[in-house]
Length: 98
Image 1 (tube, rainbow, N blue to C red):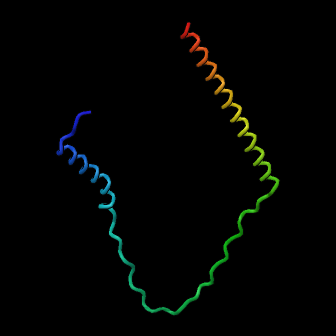
Image 2: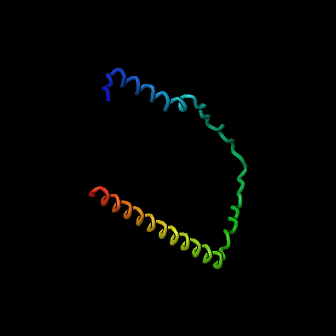
Image 3: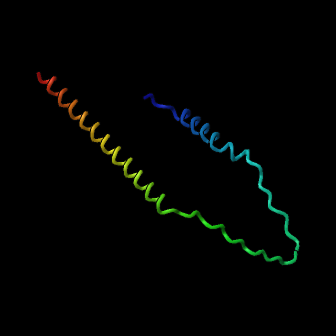
C-alpha cells in the first residue's frame, strides 16, 4: 500500500470533516421560545395510561413449543452439515494420501 504524503492526509481529513460537519452547519438556528407572560394557573389532570396487552397462556405455550421445535430442527440440520463436512475432509485426505 503506497504511503500518503502529509498533504494528502490533511486533504482527506479536511474532506471527511466537511462531510461530517456539513449537516450541522446547514442546520437552522434554534430560536428560544418567547417569554411567557403571567397566566392564570391551570392544573391539568394527568391521564391514566391505557392498559397493556392481555397475554393468553395458551398462545404463549404454543409459541414456546413452536420455537423449541424450530431450534431442534436447526440443531439437526447443523449436525447433518457438520457430518458431511467431516466425511468430505476424511475422503479428501484419503484421496490425497493415495
